[in-house]
Amino acid sequence: MSANAAVGVTLLPPELISLAATFEDTYRREYPGLVAVATALTGDFRDGEDAVQDTMVKAFARWSDVGRLERPGAWCHRVLLNVCRGRWRRKRTEERFWSRRRREEPSMPEPSADVVLFWTLVRDLPSRPRMSVTLHFAGERTMADIASILGVPEGTVRSDIARARVVITDALEGRS
Image (cartoon, rainbow, N blue to C red):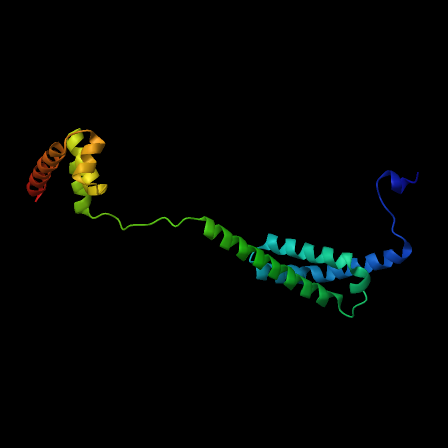
């Protein structure tokens, strides 16, 4: 067993050594420009480096053909543009997917000071009238629905809401 085999080094045949050296020269020469282009296109240095690495892996895998080109760096730039375009497409598809999955929550404007005061006063009412007023005004329930929910006669609900209106009106007039 040779020393190289013991440390896990694989020696390339002579014809591949020249190809590998040429690839390495191209890699070193083109890498900074490729990273600059990829970073500009992706907007992120790390994403740019990843795109360049993908490009150079493709170049190395096809180096027997790419290495014969007059300008292998130009081929690498073209592949890089395609890699970035593919990433944009995947990102756009992913954004569309997540936007469809996201539910639009209805938004409402902030309540006015009068509304806040009204509900503050409602919270100060005794339990049953507070629930009756809340179900009627916030829950938009009918008197019959409220009576059913609270388990009381409909007349009691009407009475509770009428008394609550008096208490709230008096409190609002007292603050004016």
